[in-house]
Image 1 (cartoon, each protein chain N blue to C red):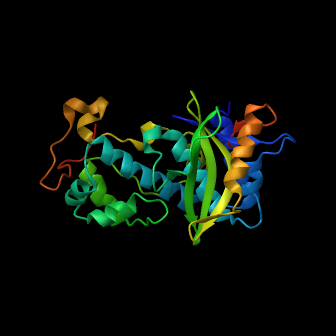
Image 2 (spheres, rainbow over the protein chains, first blue to last red):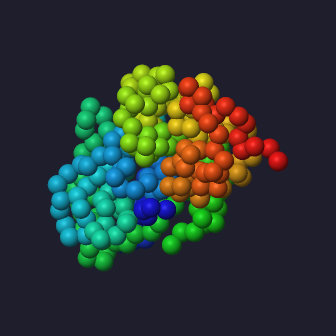
Amino acid sequence: MAMRFVDYVDGRGENVIQAWLNQRTIPVRAKRQINARIRVLAALPRHHHVRPHMAPLADKRGQACEGLHEIRVESGGVQYRIIGCYAAGRDEFIMLAGATERDRRLIPHEVRQQAFHRLADLESGKGSTRDHDDR
Amino acid sequence: VTTTTDKYDQIWRSLASDGRDGFVEAEIVEALSAQILVMREARGWSRADLAQRAGLSPATIRRLEDPNRATYSVDVLLRLAAAFDVGLQVRFVPFSRLVDAAADLSLDDLAVPSVADDAPHQSTAPAADSRGRNQSTYPAAG
């Protein structure tokens, strides 16, 4: 594995990425494709983490992170996104929030702020990470 | 740290709880699109280079490298295998074997070397014909 992909776990112990993937609104086929994408990206060196597989999303903010990026998966006509960041100094991508994209706008609209908030919680010790869970 | 065994168990449990819908397709599309990209770049080829060698258009190569858009036919995969000078396995397998491969996926599985760089057989690699296909059965029987 070239890089670890880890899920953000909030202060209550909930794996927010697994919870998002297991929503009833996300079809099983989409979940399969997202999980397969994560396994492939984990096997690839970072210079291959580019479009159409991934894309940078926003400017740098926070100490533990090199800026937000998104994993880009289309399934059944829906654009799914997982927002996260590369951990500074480690071969690790931290997945912070899930979203969909329509007309070039992320839904929920506040998902970037949510990701930065979770990143801040991670830096302050309120949140944690866990290896991505394929279930 | 999650081990390969842990990952195998996670995928297997997911198949048991959610069903197998889409699993085979996702594994094929995601791995093949990454393989084509990685193998092309490892050889220093542009999309146009690969397109020319495989008898396809650069736009088709771009689509085949995009897991969100790609669809594959055996004919296209055979053309790509000949262009890359690599083998190709297309066969039905038990789910357990597919899950095993998914759980243990590594860069070595994706960045497949051409037969000339296939270490165990370097000294016995067969010559290729004008389309890049191996002229003899390989590896040789016996």
